[in-house]
Image (cartoon, rainbow, N blue to C red; front, side, top):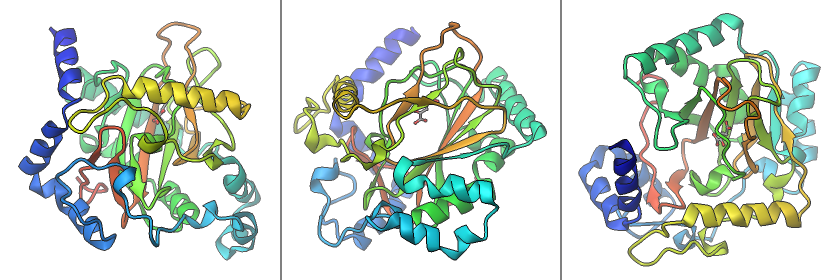
Length: 327
Ligand SMILES: O=C(O)CCC(=O)C(=O)O
């Protein structure tokens, strides 16, 4: 039954009209998008399908650390100078590498609290795995401990500094095992206008070894051009999203990794370690060499509160809660 529903849901998701209908039925969730459409002069209804091909190009800006002089400006920044040397070093590599590692950010007690909450929520059926069978989406809405970790002020402060705007939580994903997800950039799923105002924080909730499917990432890949709908054959049409659009996207990314000779790194971590990555950093989940090994972790995605967030691949605006710190 579950498999049949998933397949049915999968097909349903290709019809753009469904999203228009869902948007129409959820006016409260469209408030942010409407405000951003006005702000950025996007002259079409936010109910309708959108992707980067219809975004205005005039006057769009880049995050300050994506610009050519990023390294120098960051080095001179007073906030960076005031940080302890290890954190300063970690942050200084952002413009070139596109990631920052913060070791030991969360205590064992904080990690245990989140793990306990996830077990409880899964056990009580309050949250469940999505169609991938590996991801528990939006658990922050159901648990104060998850919410507190995702909205940790130290993470938000780093994100605000790196992106140059006030960042806010959009979504959390909790894992009990590895995702084994192919390399991708978050911007294909959660796109912003202007581009680049998104980042993710990944928290190790147990020891991450080469065997339990660690996060894998490609340092420096964030500097490659964004791979978005106009730059690959996604197979979609006027009324439908390409049924295998994501597989086509993944092949395009795999080719880019090969062409640019990108070298993978893995995030081997202790519980409480955090890796923050750039909107366009290519990353995914390594194969689990021990099948179904436990790999408790949480990915949280954030975007700047005064930009438009939408879903490039499924061509719809994101539904944004007004306050993700207190749901
Ligand atoms: O945790 C993983 O294995 C991958 C996570 C990921 O790709 C993401 O959250 O964007």
